[in-house]
Length: 414
Image (spheres, one colour):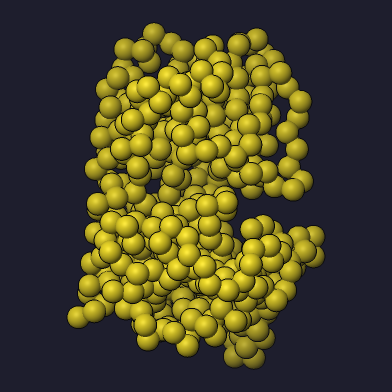
């Protein structure tokens, strides 16, 4: 059985939640389930510019066939930023859709917004349309981008959407409503994301199922042994304790706020605690010089797991997530997590798990750090961390996740 995935970027070098999600599922459908998987994506590495950086055409990556297409419009961030801030507040309003003349104009503005947002690659849609008869279903990742929002129109009822939805202006566009209504199934990443979809678009609620992404429990387990000891010596991780953030370093992810609050805490308390920042930096994101803040770049898989396993806590300050793989990985490694409760997905984790702590401001951030170093936490941490680990293993196993994709494909074949 052959299926296709559509995602805006693809490859091991790509840093991004939806992109990593698509790659992990695609590779496992090939290796573990015996499916043939084709990827339709762009030649871009940089999501801000969509600059054509990789060769176009067909290639193979870990048993997956990849078709890459060039974007015909490069996005200039300042230019698009002006367009974005001007039109997003207008386009998210629903009242204008009932005004015939105005609605036609604003629908055209939405089309223009998606074209400017990118990656604008009409050749990708043309190729997908010409080959769609080869596929039982086509899985589209991330409602926000042109290949998904317009590619769904090409394959019609073969489309399954993995929306990675947040409470943001484009989620309320008329195009998003059309996308939600057009697909045969919607695979949400979390309970919070599923609730957002159902609340905003009640008519599609029956199509929503929580799938999420699996975690590599075997790798995590082995890193508690000799590999972990060797990595700890190689990485020279501080014994006095540290916090770790892994992901894209940008203001949109709240990393600037995390840096400020951590520096304030250290300057006030004088504690010998370190903050490591790992991942790809946005072009204009600066990390201030501070003796207890270090940028360690993009980590290997083994380094990532070791940083998580040995940390005092993992921090996710992001205001928007549909899943937060980072939080789930920390819970699986029995590491406490500090999160931003303004993010509904993270707030849900904090409400249901004693190993996840939520902070709204610098004072609460400081209180959590004091708790994690207290005798009270030492006495109750074993149960809290064990309960979180068990929940992640049961909820986000690859067996369960792949089973949902397989069932979707088998249902489509009937």
